[in-house]
Amino acid sequence: MSSSHNALIARQLRSWKEEQVETPAPGPGEVLVEVLYSTLIPFDIEIVEQGQFDPEKWLPHIPGINLAGKVAKVGEGVLPDRLKAGDEVFGMVLPTYGRSAGGMQRFALLPHEALGKIPANIHPADATTVPDNLITSWWTLTHYLGLPLEPRREKQSFADESFLVYGASSTTGQFLIQLLALAGCTRVIAVASPHHYDYLRSLGATHTLSYRDADWVDQVVAVNGGQKVKYAIDIIATDSSLRGVGKTVGTDSKVAVLLPMKFGHDKIISDGTTGQLVWSLDDDQKASLFTQGGHIDYVRTFLYNTDENLKKNLMTTIIPDLLLNGWVKPTKKELIEEPSSLWERATKALHLLRTNAVSGQKIIIKV
Image 1 (tube, rainbow, N blue to C red):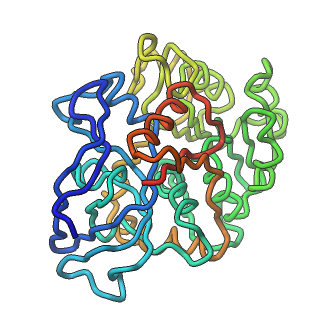
Image 2 (image 1 turned 60 degrees about the horizontal axis):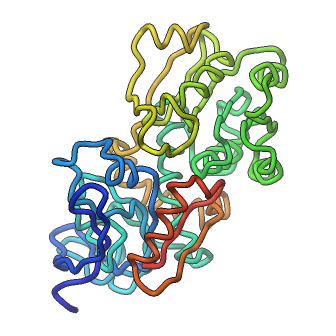
């Protein structure tokens, strides 16, 4: 194995390059992965191209929050029945893992608990669509909404409650709907674009409504028997989406909002010149947006491994088993395998992100 490998890296704002970086050796509990596929997400645009986060902290930046590949080497303490050289694996990269973990490079170094074996029935490119959004979905339901979700197909204790998923056609929304369907939920209201309706219903949504309808809020309450919903999840998290979601909930409702909130524009990615990222609502904003109350919490996916049970089991066991059993399936993908260089493939993916050109799919890049 060479002492260096190619990586997509931003060492300064608005400057992506393909460079050679040092190939690390795995330490105790670590795994070196030869990466086959990875992904770029809006977060990467916000860091590198818009400077929405402190450059002193976030640069240099090697992106790739999800990856799939083969184990190249394992460190001390990683037992063969856990992972060994040649195993096909997939996982999610947290900022605390360091820059050597990013998936947009030939070799990535991660803690073993960040990786799961890819089930034999799943292609590595499809597996790459899964980790960040399925982890977000599980963490949202269990931690922020406090639901006792179990990884098995049976009617669970909260199955008869009402759920609103705003932004349901997003990749996170698709996994949320699948998990709620797995739990036997009978009132899953999906708000999305109409051309996603059939697919969302195939995943388990019981009602599909269009955010383009001026009266979509009234429709939510109507399909819920004239009652406010018990649980609401806003994946899009703009000021306008929050204002609408706020009208569907009441005093006893729980609301999970995926961070960051985006005020001043209605797209997942803005041009960076308008609007702002917001991390919490002050009392006046809550009173304005959620006029009838409700408990509001903010989803921070990067904190999921502060739960020791999830740190040990979510990526290593729970998610692979969900896929193996067919209880959850990967999302649709926009697979970029050409042109020949990593930088050119990344440039193509970044353009799709900047222009909000992909809907209901994950952008996957061959590394």
